[in-house]
Image 1: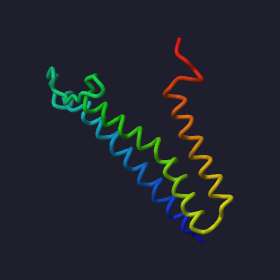
Image 2: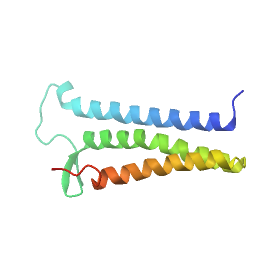
Image 3: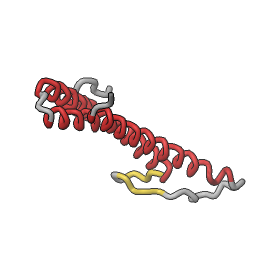
Length: 119
C-alpha cells in the first residue's frame, strides 16, 4: 500500500532523474554537434559569461544537470519533513530536517574549504 510520502518521493526522484538525464544528453549532443556535421568551426559553440569566466553552453547544461541531480535528495528530505509535520509525526520530521541540515552544512563546508583547505 503506497502512502502519500511514497508517491511524493517517487515523483520527486523521477522528475530529478529524468531532468538531469535530459540535460546531460543535451549537453553531450551540443558538444558533439560540430563533429556530427563533419566540421570543426572555431567559435561555433555558444558561450556564457559565468562569474567572469566564459563557459560553453554544453558545460552549462552539464552543470545544470549536476545541480538538479544533487538537489533531488535534498528536495525529497524537505518534502518528507513537510509530510511528516502534516501527519503530526514530529520525530520523523525532526530526523528528516536534520538530514537536510546536514546536507546543507556539508555543502557550505565543502564550498568554503574549511575542513579540507587547498594547499
